[in-house]
Amino acid sequence: MAKVDMTSNNPMKTETTLRFPTISLSGQAGTSFKPEHLAAIFTQSGRHGFFEVHAENYMGAGGPPHRALERVRRDYPISLHGVCMSLGGPQPLDKDHLGRFKNLVDRYEPALVSEHLAWSTHVNTYLNDLLPLPYTAATLAHVCDHVDEMQDAIGRPILLENPSTYVLFADSSMSETAFIGEVSRRTGCGLLLDINNVFVSATNHGFSALDYLTDFPLSGVGEIHLAGHAEQEDDEGDRLLIDSHDGPVADAVWRLYEIVIARGGSIPTLIEWDSQIPDWPVLRAEALAAQAILDRQANRREPSHALG
Amino acid sequence: MRSAEILPLRPQPPDFAGPFSAALLSPDAATPAQVTGPHGKRADKRYNVYRNNVTVSLIAALASVYPAVERITGTDFFRAMARFHVRETPPASPLLFEYGRDFPDFVDSYDYAADMPWLSDVARVERLWLDSYHAADAPALRPEALSAVPPETLGLLTFKPHPATRLFSSTHPAVTIFAMNRGAGPVGRVDDRPEDGLITRIDDEVTVRLLAPGDATFLSALLDGQCLATAVAAAFETEPAFDLPGAIGEMIAAGAFSHIEMESCHVEHV
Image (cartoon, rainbow over all chains, first blue to last red; front, side, top):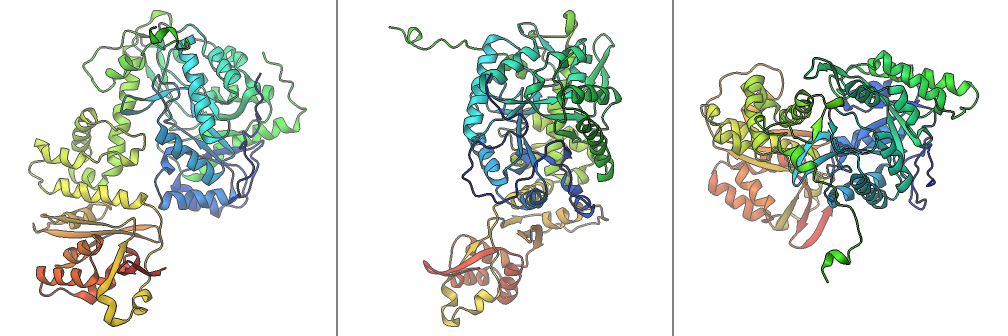
């Protein structure tokens, strides 16, 4: 198995001059960073936790977004989360976008860098959603090429995130967990386990979230995502969950999270909240709830890594 | 020898993205045949989640670029108008703050907006506001830089624009309408008249100023790299009452320039 530093996915290179302090996020819980929370974040006491930003929001040349992110980065580790690299698509990666991504990594020295097992661009159209792909030998080879290319471009390993999906492909020939495990094995990438995505997909496709987590290569996970979801119905009137990131984490997802942490140890954990954004104390309370679970685990003996 | 016989064998993935994406922005297209629910369940509503995500999120992206236009038209009107544009002209870049450059022209062609001939220019001001917001960082020219220049050579100065500086001219009062509708404050009647606006960013704040007569001619010449004497002459030709000290003072205070140069010789970089 390829060797990856699972706890930090630190930069491969060490010769760069650090403009920001290196701050560990080991065993910590963080939240999405929203500029409207900036003042509240810096009036609270303590500098615990970390913040995650969508990389594309900081790809402008200059201006207020960079001032805000510089301010955050001076006191906190950040996680740079890409949402539009289109790693799962059949077409070549956008070289300009790879260059912009590398510039951000160099500029902000993030503790974590992640992208999605999904696609969002077709030909010249950017569709602004994380779209699903079939799991086959052919798509596996393509995704591995894309992950290799991104890791080479930015000079460090990424964490690849499991998707939430609403449809399946008739021609899929592998399970999602086998596909993700094979990408990690072939490319050396780490993994971002989104437990809300697991719960959403498990509900939508009628499989057991616990079975999925048992099959998931937990030793490769460098970050966990938790988020809220919404509920609709499919054509048969059955429950169809939507990965909406617009509310608190569901009770069922918290229970799965406790199971994962008991098995995998105190993996850095992020609360995602991207729409109908609440006041900072509400979002922070979600992170503190995750932190309590991480701390409880850290005070236990080391995880056994025995799954299932 | 055919090239296929010497190329390394790399399985070509079926183009799942083509059929999947083709129906995303076409509400009348059928659900792609390749997708399914579990155990052969239908996937129409399931696929529609993606359709909805794409359309709604891109309408929201336009709304975040054009909040004054949305306030003027009301949310329902805006969403209907934006939905047409999203389907006709989806983004070509993953950077959504670059999206919507074609939207003002679309507004011009949108029949239901024909009774608001100034609306597209309000949109153009909003687009420039966002460009200014994301433009590269640079220091702004300090007022005292001018006092270091010998008076007899002032006319030879050229003014280098700050990267966030934009100049806009409208045959309608687009700047006033923009300013009234970017906040939640009251709006009133505005007489139809041409307006010029200066958009700048200083101390990380984007501001839009209404320019006095002659100012736009003056500033346009400076932004084109003309020397101060040429710009002043052009301004007085347009507006005999042009207020030179007032114009240059306000433009420097607004952060419109990053530095000044003498002919090709670098004088001051603050």
